[in-house]
Length: 184
Image (cartoon, rainbow, N blue to C red; front, side):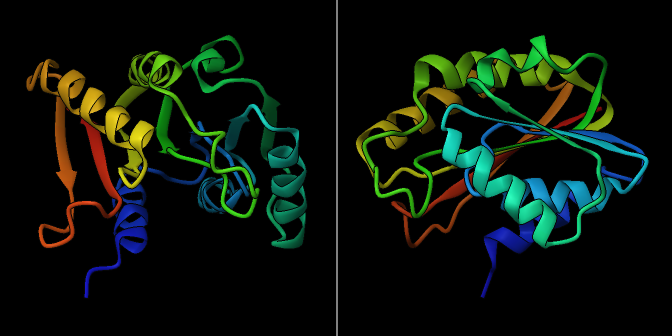
């Protein structure tokens, strides 16, 4: 059976190397931040963003517990403001949309009004041979609308600059899926 989380990491690893810069645009509980930190190693840099102070606390704790190198910076702000904190190109970026698992607050989710500018900003931060991965959770109304808006936006982008693909289980249309955008 296809493991979408493992497949996401496989795509990221084809671009991200030790010493690179990466962003976790929706840190949540820090799983993607840990993955990026370990992948870029001691000489790399990772910036992670979330609007919830609990996300920063959970992520910092997880990074320390997992023995990650001291290569990360956590920001308590919306992902659409990432460009104010990260200068220069990034090799990889990850969005894991929806609500923070375990938070008990399923009403607090990522929203189209900030996600679309955040994705647009993230794309402008990508360097050569880079990747942006956006995991979408259409199982709730805002998640479905967010996914539709993202697909509409991605469909307008030049195929000469970016290669964009969607990965979804066809026999489970309400299941999470992800979109990757790779620079050429």
